[in-house]
Image 1 (cartoon, rainbow, N blue to C red):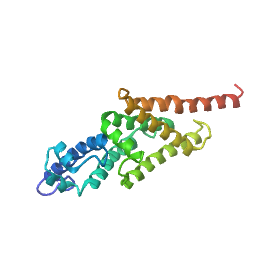
Image 2: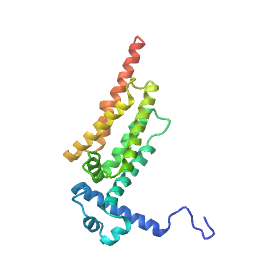
Image 3: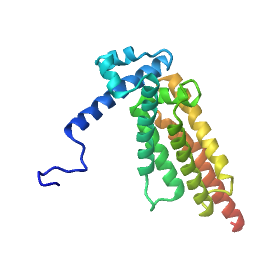
Image 4: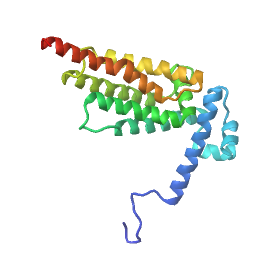
Length: 217
């Protein structure tokens, strides 16, 4: 606190209000990009959805490409923050991986428009301008690989290529998300459930069977 009782590290009320308005605009833009794609969405449409003038919209964003990039980066930052905060070091690597997956799909269940937008972007149908998000996405997958490698070293799962296992989990998860979107009546939490039941648990069971055979049991 300074002499006037203000916290220098806390944003001012004006800055907080500006951030709130920015997030409201991002929310409006997310839904429009998800439904109409990049080319089918205009700044006027975003302004109308956010109930502000186009002029005020340009006070927050330089243009549609900046708007699109900001949508990706906003949601990506939220997802990665949740994933990185999931689980703790007292848990096994596989259980930490499970916790990350549950945290991610939990965000998706609460932000369906973002998932539709995300799937479009990852399939290359979006603007493809978001290198920062792709870098964070790579770090997210890198954390999966790290946890799988630790699980192998701990003797929790078989000695398979952790990068291949990551690719399998990511590929299956992405395909299942697209299926959930198509069906429209399946929660995204089913993705985590299937990854666990069809990939992670079988790996653990296979390792236990290997140990049993090695022990002559």
